Length: 497
Image (cartoon, rainbow, N blue to C red; front, side):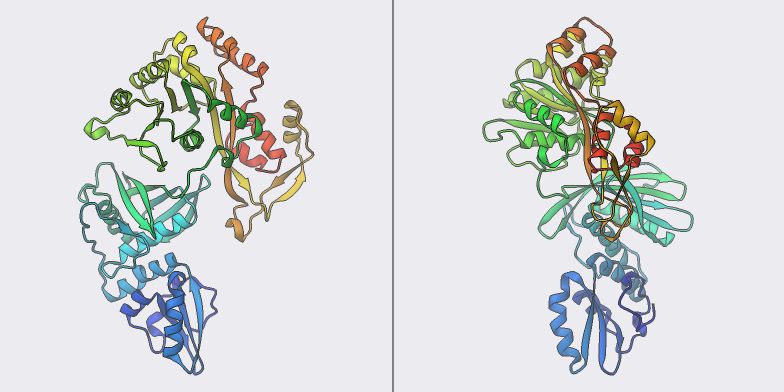
């Protein structure tokens, strides 16, 4: 960018800052969060990091008096990347990283003097958190390094960098995650902890060797300050009422089912947050601990030292728990222990990977759990998916198409219109903002239990559950389209209809 252009620019592209008259020293730029863009006989234009605007403004106005000062406010993450990729690289030309002290917390808002790559990583992580991304994907290619964020369940390219940065960025993240920086041939998994203001956040880190280097994925945990309640997740009236009813069971098994990333753990956490944590002893076994819940004992699985789901479950029964949450029932040993714990008077919450709620019965049977045990302990199974909510500012109402009319009539619903996504500045031109849950809840009634005991095919359970008022996932999805919460294309994308 040349000096004197309009203030509608990305500071990370402002590479000619040294050519501006009366340039600022690099150390001042890093410490103050301000850089001069242009200067005339009467006016100075400076770009200022949003977080440091107040303290920089008064100094700049007094320093440049009697000239007027016009400030351009930029995102902290953009300014940090500007310092890392342009200022530091121009002054030092070094991409080295320094090893942290063991157990060090990394401040994302700290602009470092030591290495450009540190500021690039900080800027990427900071931007991901502020845009409510769930994952950061750093993907090396032949001639570029692509950075993508998963936002509302969909990946979006947010930055393309020089491929030469790939190795330095990978090494720095390995240092932060206490991984082997020399190992580039084998996959590695780790964790790193960072701070953002007064908040501590965890990142689960995964490295996989690929054709042009190492693919890096960082999953963000603890990004939200508060645990969401059931009423905040978007459950429709019927499933919500069933889940509220599930909170009152004295013992038994409650399962959340669905594919990876469908919000199962969030639902279990919401159920726990709705329990009386003062009078109940609640213990969770998670891999990893995604959110901290006050009043709950949360245990992190560590397979490397033998701290597995089933080994922990054997021990915590001596802790006199009332409620136990198991992050996932993965194998027969964990399934049998969970069933046994439910039989002995505990409430057990866990997750399974099945396509719908009733398939949880088949999955448990396939794990070797006898049918009579399934019918004895299983109380509720909720299947769910997450769909994007249509942006309320740019979406448009249109008449139902032929497919939606057929689905509306199939489920005996009402409605003549639906909304379609358009895209605006508020939703990042995606047409969507946030996500809501599409669900079905299977309650194991006496009739269903008798059918399971008799070994009858699971297909018969669908008819029994339907007679008892259970609505399938597709019903809830169509209902949300007719209510204007999401779009027909979104429920088609999630294969709900």
